Length: 174
Image (tube, helix red, strand yellow):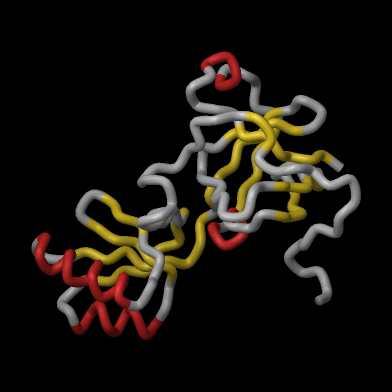
């Protein structure tokens, strides 16, 4: 099984020119996990080891233990795109979502959240237009998450790779 544990730095141009040998398409919920067993789009099984708190973002490149490079892609998932007639109304919506500790993606003139009927009704009550979309979800990393955007500027192993460890895989019995 291929083990992915090294994020390729966007500052290292040589690494970024490496050929991409596979795609790993995951929803946000799985890109937050520090230990994960998943499958590349080719069907090959992989183990992912990251430091707790690391979030893999769409476009991240990971190098495997055998030197292969895999691109992480954000899977489309059930979301709501929130828009408003003016910036003030959109800021009010963002405030109320933050007050409920709701993860949100901030876009140019819109917010994106995971689909949630209660939040949809709240946002509609605030005057927002809420549209269901199947879309990649890339929420803000948070005030203590090391800044807005998505890529780690370092390189090297993301986390120590245990020799033997059970890795969670969606669908595994508890």
